[in-house]
Figure (cartoon, one colour):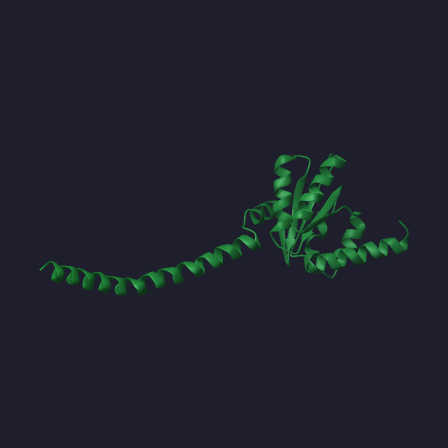
Length: 172
């Protein structure tokens, strides 16, 4: 890589780190190209990105971003996974690490909060943004349905009572 390409890579990474909801750093020594492509495609499907960059360039790109506290994690063969959704990158990386012991999660960051490996795994267990939205809509819709049933119940009861009196009068 010449200087212009390095500058372009650092600028691109800096922009990505600035917009990322979460960043995950992991060791990937021993992962085959096919496995790496599988990880990249899963991450892309979840709305995230996986990059392998020189540690020195990644550290330069992290400076001035909210995730700057994770600079110490960049030692050895590291990859960076990031996404705008704070849950997507940790979830995909943790799921991939469960099936492949060569991917070792070192830690990460969510905004200004730096996370250790356990923090990233805990973040991965949270529901995604879409799941939370669906739950919220369900919780909002349920009381409205119950209110409608309660409001209609007295009218239905009155109608049944009147109907019973009418049948009683007809029988007599």
